[in-house]
Picture 1 (spheres, rainbow, N blue to C red):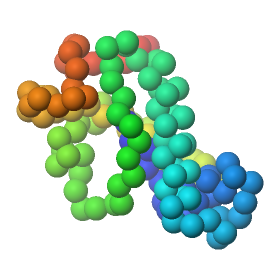
Picture 2 (cartoon, rainbow, N blue to C red):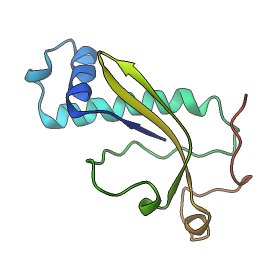
Picture 3 (tube, rainbow, N blue to C red):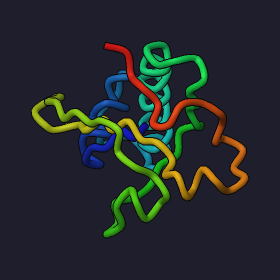
Picture 4 (cartoon, helix red, strand yellow):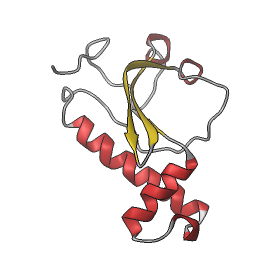
Length: 118
C-alpha cells in the first residue's frame, strides 16, 4: 500500500502526533512520523484483507516522474480523502505478474489478483 500526501501535510500530521509545531520538526522527524502513520494505516488495512496477503515495511519515497508500474506494482484500488484541508491518497498495490515471478522475499503465494473483502 502507499499513502501519499504533500510534505506539508506529512509535517502537520507528525506535529500532531508529537504535540509540536510543524516548523519545529526536522526532515528526519517528518519522515519517521509519516512512516509511522503509514504503518498504522497499513496495519489497519491488513486486518481487512485475506491472511495470505503481505505488507512490506514502510518506505518513504520522494515524488518522481515514475509511476507504480515502473516499480513493478499495479494499483488494485485507491481512494483520495481530505485531511487538514489537504489531500491524502491511499493506494492498495500488488506486485505485477512479471515482478512476482522473480524470487522476491515479500512475494508470497495466493490468488492473483488478491481479492479485497466487501
